[in-house]
Image (cartoon, rainbow, N blue to C red; front, side, top):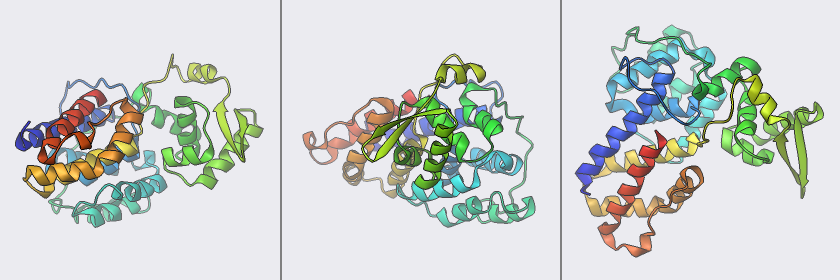
Length: 306
């Protein structure tokens, strides 16, 4: 595969993935478009990913800004702020300062003040709402995160409960890393729920693993027969942003292949834990030859995500 072909295919699949997730949230850019997916959506990860990467996909970028203005009450502001910090580990687009400012103030400022922040983003000087949004249906199984927020509030409790529904026993450190909250905050909630009989704690060394009691009962209360597949969207979108930014650096296949080698260990760990995929071993490919097998694997992973 040529670099030019990969850039085109990668961008198309990247935005297809983003559009499908935003369609579930009522962003009607393509009426009648297929919205099937197979993974629970992570709102803050999706917002951060879109604002960091979608400046060239102007319709989507503007639509997401409008969604933020109209649905701020659904957003966990502290988690969103932390999300921006986590994503910066994967790369920093030129407009990162403007994105961070907007995310920092998304729940604090009035709409008029937020519009001033939006005007500092690339090409958004004349931004205005286009009335393209429909109501968000939190009964949608892919919006389980928002349904739990309606039950527990827009706070760490809803994210912890979602994690417990999706995973087996885990300790507070693992949960905190996965959901984007401070470990101490997570630990205190887990202990309170254990005392209330909601969780079962299994002692393991100095730490404890926590699991949800009567998980089938909780799923029944949520009108669900089972859990959709789990993706750590913080990791996955972070990796996709990183590749997106690398492709912006140069049109030299050798240099791109070199950058792919640099990120291969971390990228392989993310793909393996989330999709069961592995990247080709860089040591088996010399120079720019590594570009093609890396690119093929990434496109296959993107297709699997939607």
